[in-house]
Amino acid sequence: MAKSEPGARRRGPNDPDRRARIAKAAIEVVAQRGIDGLTHRSVAAAAGVPLGSTTYHFATLDDLLEVALHEAAEKNVHALKEWESALPPDADFAAALADLVMGYINEQYRDTVVEYDLYVAALHRPRLRAASAAWDEALIAFFGSRTDPLTGRLLAGLFCGLLMQAALADPRPTREEIETLFHRAITGPAM
Image (cartoon, rainbow, N blue to C red; front, side):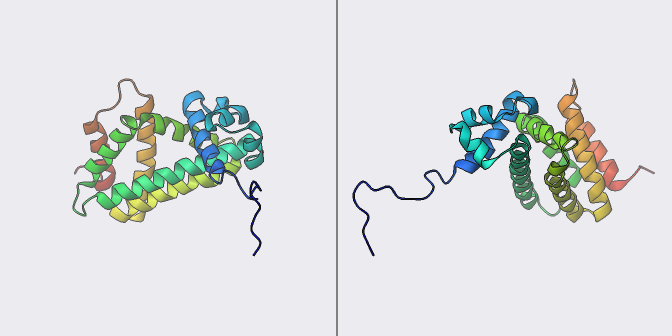
């Protein structure tokens, strides 16, 4: 095996994490400027990479949006798995869901807004719909595992709707109001 000469450059990627940094930077740009503020130039600046790197890895803005949505959905699904695995089997599920919503609209408000910006972008960009559907399916599966498939679907829709409404409402609904809605969805109307 021949030795490389001193000073010779090794071929291969200088920055193997660059693509991932660009993807994370795309989410950061959406958080700061919204979907309309997402440009290759703004993402390159946020990632600390040359402009050509963003266009090399993500030729179009839709490519950047798609990777940002996938990244956000992956992060959310991972967090949801951790939440669900930490939840005791006998937990009051409606109360746990109310706590989860409150966490998303309080401590994680910024991330929630970014995720909804990306989620709503899929309405106008069909190629983004697979990533948003993956998030929906994960919610349905998690919530259905604690109830049943139909109730899981109902809870997923209620959860997403409550997050959107609570993020926009002033004043925000109380935790008790949210818990009451989840109880109703799980148990049905009081007789």
